[in-house]
Length: 373
Image (cartoon, rainbow, N blue to C red; front, side, top):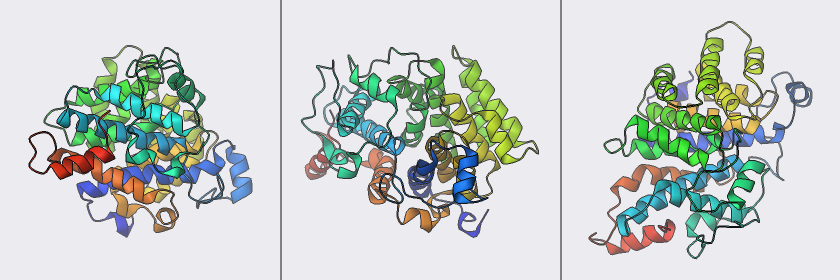
């Protein structure tokens, strides 16, 4: 652990570290997402990629992973605001509408969802940087295009990593609701949001695991202990076997003397959900620092931006934002927006909003930022 991680982070540090850490891992992995490890080492040297390289026209650009993570957070916050001001909201339904707004930013629209309107797009949608296609997953696009009723699970059988890579905000959101949410509730919500686009059990159960891990890491629990809390939740679910196997394989390899690149190769390439989660867990378990873990997570064959993003979420929560190198934070696209969302995820439960709130001005301000629809 370096000197920046020696001081125990505050809860707000962990929230900001989680979202910025995920974005940093995403941006670091973006230029090498479709490259083999051999190609990465050939192009960037024996240490692989360790600093931003050009992607999508500049340095530090995020991909669809961070875009969808932000819209996940927005959906949860909009659901909370609706519940406070109008009542009658569901996290799945309102977050599904946020995902449909993300679909609009990609130049597409839902084909069947007559219920969807974008009359109050909200603050997040106004940022032009989000209206850019950054190699979005075909499953996410197709599932959202074919949405019949916002909140209904997808009808496909995909277990791609596009569900798990976006749910870290669920753990942060639920940490603020600990008196209302059991660990089973957190797991279920993460899985339900992933199931909006990914119909295979592995595509959603992995997201349930990540949501719980983020919540428990926010509480300063060791990752090994947090994984121990997740396994009984998994075993209670149909179709849990390959997710559980992938987690246990990652744990075993993290305790072995295998070289890191060899161990990661045994876990897969990260295109499917259980591989992306396993690689990220392995990198977080063996990491000596935020920087070390994220560099491991992007220098492999396969989906480097997604494994970088998930690893960044885990280590950013564990170490806090102060552990993220400034050389990665300074050029990061949408840094201020990501920070603002992290702050809102930490603050929302203290917002005095609604019909009986003393300060109706605050209610109007919050509604304008996160309209409850």
